[in-house]
Length: 158
Image 1 (cartoon, rainbow, N blue to C red):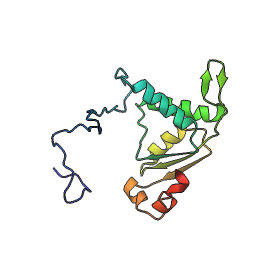
Image 2: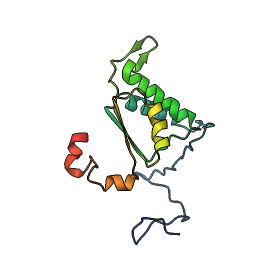
Image 3: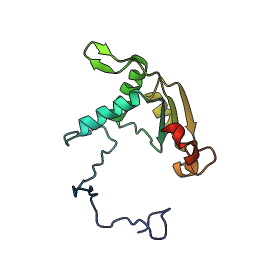
């Protein structure tokens, strides 16, 4: 079965899975964390990944959500966003009684044709310096003239 929007050589669904390998020959198996309320984080590295995510979001000047719907059942992701955006105003916790200097609220952009999804993300990312909903598919936005991250402007966002 050919996936929609793929080139003639194609990407095919239901082909045999191939784990990515590093240059040193290490095999990596992808892990997918489904968006539901009963997440399990007993796989190695999950706590480290989620903490790194909170840290990066806590100091970002701009956060762009592309095609993410923030499902109502995904309590953990909503909690993570709320913590990170709280930290933008109050600073990251560096010890039990100390916080870093706050980075300030970031601009939030949501690219998703579904306004309900955009509103859920807006609620989870308050306070934000600004909030912009772009009612578009990811592909249409990237291919549009309004896409701000084309190669000529890439150095501005590095």
